[in-house]
Length: 489
Ligand code: AMP
Ligand code: MG
Image (cartoon, rainbow, N blue to C red; front, top):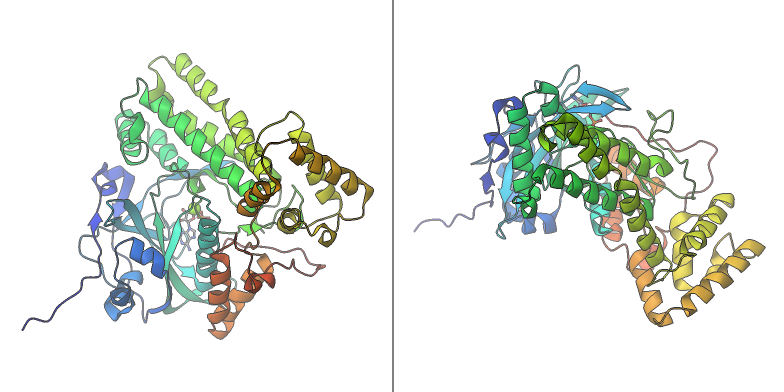
């Protein structure tokens, strides 16, 4: 009798590896001493067509650790450039390797990337490795973003390596397996444009269109359409960040995708009390990537993307610049209309009136003045327990509240449907920094992953109001020390 063997389900294609050689370097991960699986994303694994039991076996874990290459994979480090805090640099996957593209049973294509698998030709001075804390942080926040219905890369697994990484102190090493519709970045185009090889740039653009925007393939000027589509996706994405109070922290052009997914969770964090100037990242000393600056930086990054496409937009350079500028000039309005309709939904408003913007601004400026918690203020308006906000009792809030109630009464929709819209648009829980830190500390310092598992469970249904969410809704106690996040490199 033959023993039945259930395959893990890896089903790779490697379309990126069929691009010209200048776009990547093929190499295998550097094996690690003693890999141990610390978290596996069961629902994601299943949706990718993978067998959970096999993934948990020694062979399965060896793949997440880079100790074994699954059949059909073709590991490579991608080349890219990027503006880091405004300055252009040659970068590339210095501590990541693309294993290949998993084709799911539904025929979808996802990049499977190891983050932290050892040095690559793009590592510069770095060790190509990652520490456990930052990898778990990416896991938690990316999965929370997904549950908040925000386009994002996802996290399939984290393994510890049994090796240490040296940062300011010695830390446990880990590898994250990241899943993305692709890892094409604005920086990938900057790299191609910087090389000055228009043929290769065109190949990259055609590849991108085929992979992400097949609907524009037959357009008269498909490269202009590509620019317009990316502008649309990023305007939509950044408005979603703003609506939930997410701060990316390092919006360098290499950390902005062409697909419109959020990528590279380094020093990111969610805002507690509302203030557009909020910055958490220890390296963002000038507040370039502050909460309120993100829409502007989105436009700046897209202008860099537009520049890379100039040789493809028109053979006449002046005309190309004109086309690019016209496209870029749509970004502000696109962003703003996405944000405005999102804000209307957060306030239970279905239609549009000219004064809506000032109604929203009125609320936000009160929140800023009184340091009201961003998430909880919208929740309180949703549940109607307005006495729970610090704004309650102030004359300005009383006045605002009357205006808002009158606004809701002027629309056709019932109060119940308004409340339903708000419940759907205002999360009960977000990954609050003190909760994330607590989970990471338990995992990294004590090897206790249960705190993180409970947090992940609560974050997986952010729009559901249940008793177990309650304790995760409390903002942190006021601290004298400002909260700081680190890139974890
Ligand atoms: P990030 O800040 O994660 O977007 O990374 C910026 C650049 O630095 C990318 O090219 C990374 O691959 C590279 N990098 C970050 N950490 C390391 C590391 N430990 N070793 C090598 N390269 C790294
Ligand atoms: Mg990056």
